[in-house]
Image (cartoon, rainbow, N blue to C red; front, side, top):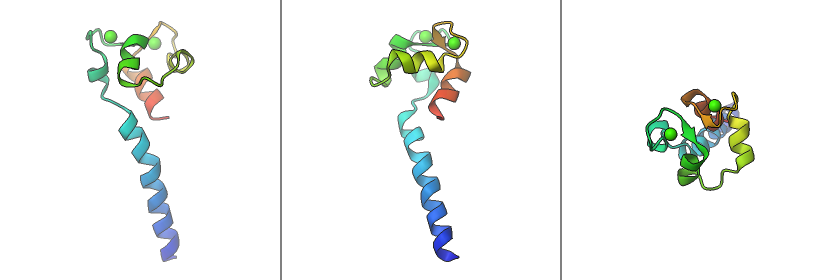
Length: 76
Ligand SMILES: [Ca+2]
Ligand SMILES: [Ca+2]
């Protein structure tokens, strides 16, 4: 019983850490302050992001990520 509890805690910590570390604050990415993150703005802070990943996060396909789209994308 005790062992199960420890394992569950470890899994929770592992699952939470990468998202927090890899997800900069929305406002700090939106460098031109227009309330949306363009691909060019995103790759400054997350250089590994591909155009495909950006497009799949851009759910309304307007070419930029709203705060809602960004939050959805980074939380996985
Ligand atoms: Ca912007
Ligand atoms: Ca969008």
